[in-house]
Length: 275
Length: 275
Ligand SMILES: [K+]
Ligand SMILES: [K+]
Image (cartoon, rainbow over all chains, first blue to last red; front, side):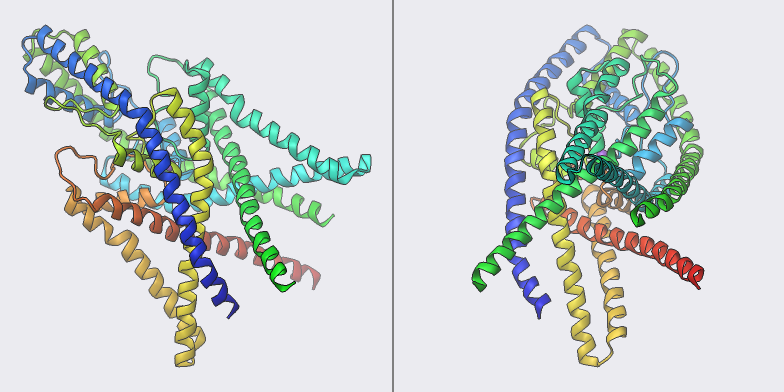
């Protein structure tokens, strides 16, 4: 009966949550619409202008031939090939395949590489099916190790200075700041140096990657005009692994705070009713 | 001291897990390399051949002009514009922005649309920062409701036929099969009908979406040659929401089974030592 009551109570709150979610999405899409719409329209105008210029300058091309050409180039781009010089950029070498595997298993899924054959797509499904839980378990472990490290540090400090509560707050704040620096604020500096992005672009890439969104508009190691040091992809892989564990820990802490606070509220209400 | 012991015991198992993870990734990347590498090489050869044919047929284009043209077309494609007829396909309308918001908050991140201006990128970071936990809490709620629905069903059936254990197993199996049908096996049929994909492609899209990988190689509602019914995107959004809740529930059940089994093993070992 208690479970039934809890369920009856939780359906309206779930509906409320759903409404809040939809409103949040609508507000967000209005903002994106307002910010990206005008830019897109002006880009489209510029593109049309360029197209007319092209047709004027290259009289052997008619409109249809240009469209067919564009379609072919886009198709090649989707397959990860860039028309450059005599060679094309091979992306499915072993290092590229490894980076693709990491992106599949972590559910980042940049999509700059994606399997094109049916056999590879089927394999990808099974690979992700077992790889995603494995990755989650590992991230969970790493997060727990980080957390227990911080707690032990707090315990040692508290014992040393005989001030448990202050030491706990201090250590946690330090850990949060250190994590922010190590995983979000310093990596963009590396990306500005090696990829030639601005700091904002590097930060945007870092956040989109660690949050496992992975739009794929910025991906490391994909600029054919740049040479990358050998340690670069390994360091970035390690950063992804530990950074995801750290961000997942933070998000979980936030969620447990959120859910505990709603429990607390219900507790308070019940107590006040009983009084 | 117990915590310290647990931690000391857990560091080697974490290292073991890390090794298993790396080996899994290496095996996967070898498989992708073997499957996609040859296809890529043959596509690259075909592309080069096409390029030479193009240069022969359109004598007003030299190699450099073609490269510049290709770069511009790829840039336009990245911005979501397709050179087609006189108009370009506007993707940042309100429906498109809403779909983008959903893809950001669910961390699917198809990436066929991504913010191009700095202001939209900064907004996107904050939007995802609060949206992802909100989405997780909502998915958690929906998953719990599904689970409690199944459990109540099992309870009712067990009371009716006086066979608790069998009813529980039966209901859970039915729920699993129904979920598989509703969320993974039937939606590809819809996609074959409306997007013109093969069943395998639809299934691949469904899995990649619900697992929140979202490579963006297949995205619904993005073919400019097709007209889509009005209810289509709404139904797909609902499918994404409930399907993600369902798949997250399944993955969590798998993980808890995995972790409980390792706990069980440790328990057994400890007991045998104590005996
Ligand atoms: K993703
Ligand atoms: K993605």
